Length: 549
Image 1: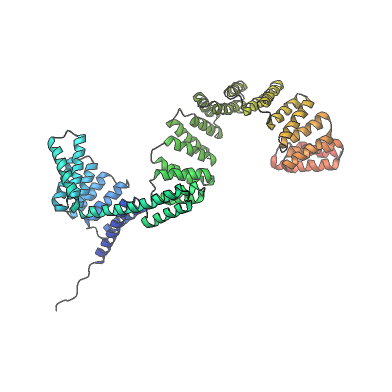
Image 2: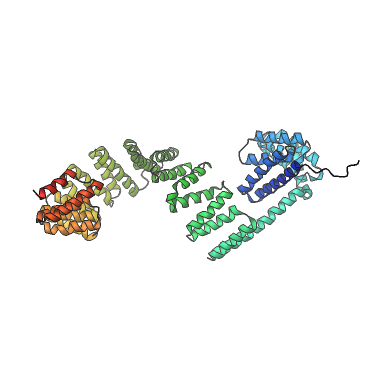
């Protein structure tokens, strides 16, 4: 009996063809729009097509080109894929074209010529593309090797014939038309949006870019435009979201990565880990590595990650040892890591480079503080502080630190003079008067000390230390505990956790004879001191016991 039923095509063949068509579309979209998701989708579909039907040659050479573009295989690997395709289909024109292209990348121009000749012979009137590729190979040979006149003639022949025959190359014309249509649409919406931007019609500009995104799917361009516009309008959250979408589409866009890292670092310091990831991605481009390591160092410092901070700043400094800012930041990171000798070395180098007098004076201040407070090398500290003041005579902070060093040494005369010099530089600085008042008090210049503390309070009524210290002068120096009460109370009002002010207030009430209030404030001191640990608990308890003996 004759079988009148048709044999159905195997499902595996239908599936493979469907996957291959999907891969072609994604591949084509990637070539037009250059968007990463299209590339990834094309690779995935080509792989699935090979799994569904490993006998289709097209899947191999097209997949090879995309994997090579992604850096996932070498040129040799791509050539192996082409060889597989040619084994399956020896007269496949595109397989020969891809093979010739890969041979050219590999520097084997003779083999590339052979592949393009085979492609030309198998193409007939549609040989425009292999002819143009052949002309490119010959041109490269002419430029890089000792070529003959014959090679020049061949180059001109293939260039001219390929250019003339392009009109019969339907795939090339089709792709060209798609490029042209897409480019015109992109150009139209981009130009419209930029025109609205110039007219300050920002909502209309955003709408134009949004429509451009919808019509062309050119997300890498329009998301970036929308991000820039949102940033200009100070809509930071919207801006970073647009840039993130642009980054998802094209992770290899360095400009977008820089914007993401910078915006995140500036406006979202709590997202330090995310910012670090962006900077680490930027390192892969191999551009401005020292600057990137420098920014990473600051991010690690903000995270209190001292080890990585030192490592990042060290890499920046190694790449650019003559950059004073890198040396300074590396020194600061060493301080955080309590590696003071290393910090001194790089602070000294930053000072030697001296890019700016005021900035270098600040570095001198930091170095002097290490000598004074950590090393106890007062001679080196004094020399460094003085060098800073020569560089910037208006730097009051250096003068105050120098005065503090003299106080620590017990040289009250030098301390008083230095603090007074600081007042001469900045007569509106409340801290200079407070420190002057303290040094005068230590020198038993009571009236002068009171004047200095009053001036400090006049300039900053909320400076609790000056309030407390003025109270101490009245209590212990002048012997007027009643006058001291208001200053201790004011210090506590300003800072309810000021343990020493509670203790002094208790002493003042004790001197007045009010044992109940004195005991109350000593008890408050005792309770607060368990947290602050500023005073001796034994001394506080003795004060309480003495009240009732």
